[in-house]
Length: 111
Image 1 (tube, rainbow, N blue to C red):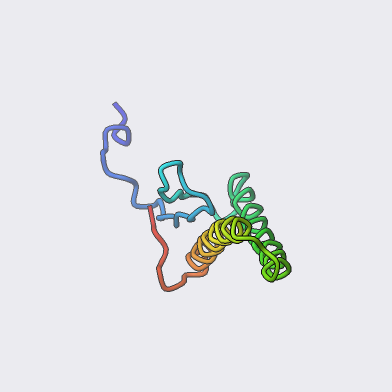
Image 2 (image 1 turned 30 degrees about the horizontal axis):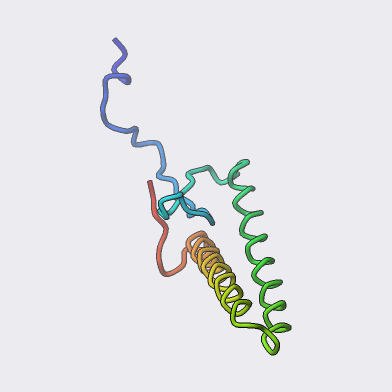
C-alpha cells in the first residue's frame, strides 16, 4: 500500500493559505470565506465585483438621501434609514474584507 495514502497527517511542504472574507454572508448570517491561491479565480473576481457594487450603491444612496431629507415623509425616512443601514453594513463588511487582505488589525484567518 502507498504510505502517503495511509498518513493522517498533512504534508509539511504545503503552505497554509489565507482565507478571504467574502462580502456576503450565509442565509443564517454567518461569514463566508474563500481559500484560493494568489492568482484568485472566478469566485474571487465575483467577490471583487460585489465589493465595488456595494460601495457604488452606498455612494448613490447617500447622494439620494442628501437630496430628499428636507421633504421626506415619515414613511420615506423609515425606508431610507433601512436602506442606509444595509449600505453601512455592506460597507463595513467590505472594509473588513479589504483590511484582512492588507493584513489589517483583525489579522488574517488561516485554514
